[in-house]
Length: 146
Image (cartoon, rainbow, N blue to C red; front, top):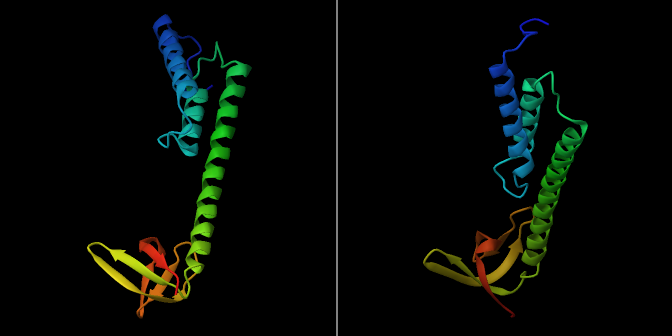
C-alpha cells in the first residue's frame, strides 16, 4: 500500500467524504443535454471519484450502477446526435438534387445571383453550379420552375 496512509485523521476522513459527496452531487444533478459535460469528461470524473473515495466507505453498488447508467445514456445520446447530423446531411443533399435544371436565387451577403442550376455536387455540403460558379446549397433562397 505504497503512499496510502492506513490511519486517517478525522479531518482527512471528513474532507474525503465531502469530496465524494460533491462529486456524486455534481454527477447526479448534471444534465446530459448540456454539451459542457461530454463522455470523456464524465469518465474522468468517475475515475477521479473512484480513485479518491474513502476506503472505509466505498461508493455503494447502487450509486455506481446509477452513474454507469448515466454514462450509457450519455453515450447513446452522443451516438444519436451523430446519426441525426448524418440524416440532416443526407436530406440536404437530396433537396439539392431536386433543384437541378431549375432557376434559383443564391444569396451571398448583399448580392443575389440568379441562374439555372446546371450541376450538383454530392457529399455532406452539396454545391450548385449556377452561371459557371459553384455555390453552397445552403445559400439558395428561392427556387423557380422553368
